[in-house]
Image (cartoon, rainbow, N blue to C red; front, side, top):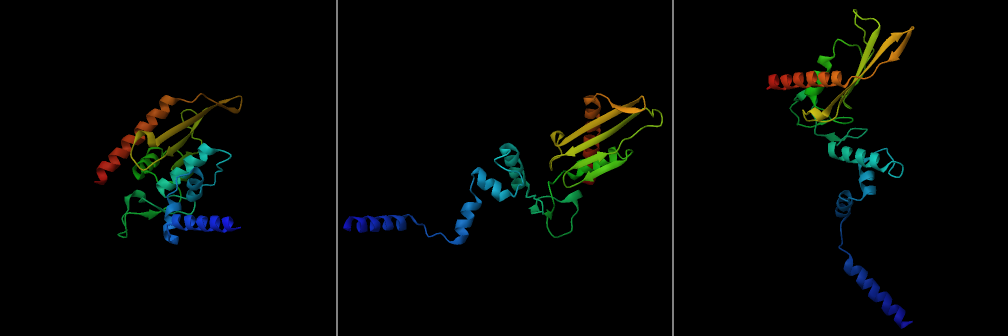
Length: 199
């Protein structure tokens, strides 16, 4: 019995000796910096499940933590179209921040096509089908994706889809990566000019 009390007292002293007497703020800061996969996922607010698709969940979580973007818009280091309201260089956004010059250049480059959907916060532009007056038997549409804040080639992706009319039905044609690259280059060149003229 005496051994049990002695063991309990030694155990309690050991336990108390290991306690750093952290305040609640210090404990919160410690957990906020935790780098385990589960803590990163919890801290980011990603909707993806770590158990179902760990790569997708970690990729989304890291992106949300890096950009500050979440579904309801945490502060992000992003000022859309370079506007200055005098308050600060940060603007609250919903989603992922994108390069404003790439966005504007994309819209201006494909302005002859009808737009089906645009989302400046996610960086997506989707056009509707477009047919020229000279060739009514072919139509094309574009998807433009802008992935980051920097004016770089890898932050821009253009995908084109074309169809031809055969027997009164639209049939998919092979995608032309050459046309996609030409469009990307046109957008990048326009974005560079916009950046240079803006000062």
